Image: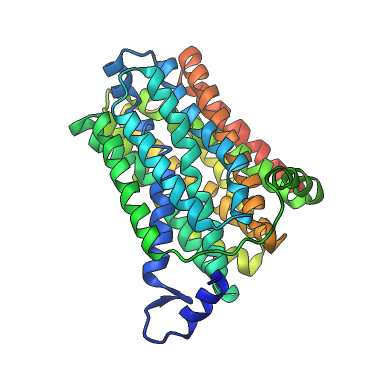
Length: 405
């Protein structure tokens, strides 16, 4: 049965509990699956200080872990996510869940940094199941409630990004970094089982062969200026986002804070406060237009990254308070911009949502990989203030791009 047929049955069933036309259980599954899948990209970040000391790797070497994970995610979005328009998304989601579970288990038992780096790359590739789930939600949702349902699923995804740091920091502090990867593998196994039981099959929206499907990404890029602008802007914002989160744990581990992985992970709670505002950003975009939300979001990111330059003028306690406030502010801006950019691109072509999503998120995670790599180098050579300058500059360029647009 097609996804459209499933949606009509859901709407017609008066007995079923629904969330704007979808069963609540299915909406919860989509949101939690997206969140747990994308969380796999970020578990390592608060653990870098502990992990590096345990396996005897330098700060610069362990900085490659989030870089390879995010690079793998970008490559997976580019080369695997477009398959959602060509094949049944249910099968794709189940296959990626199995691979992701295996890669996380490999990370948990890795004897060296080399095998951990290889596992990180595969984790990034397979975690792109999150980018199959979001278009699946858009397909299953009734048109009149599509924005709300996609926003709910994206909230799950964004909370997965941010709360992953809280969980991994706590688990690493008490049971070690290997335990965190093992717990993550178990969570993906449960998600895969639930998806196998609840997800309907999806009818392909194109019959293009694989190479033609990939080639069409270039055609979409050339044809739609709105897609190019959204991708460049979100990619620039992601540089600062990743630079902050990938170096935060190492910075807090040293002078003057001497804080452990749990403290670094707890900063994810601050970011989660920003992510919870994502549905509000979607409603504002529906009412006043997505371009306005992208400008407001980029402006917030620039302001709060720039505010972190005040940290050297404060004591250590005040610095921590400033970091918390700035994490809330810039995460709110980044997530608002992401929701608005998705609203823009999903309106371009309903038959190419997986490919349009692939282009946007490829740019976004290339930006994250660049941010992680540059931040590791800058922090090692010049310290935390250089990371702040990088984040502020990239946000300023994104704001200029949106204002010109």
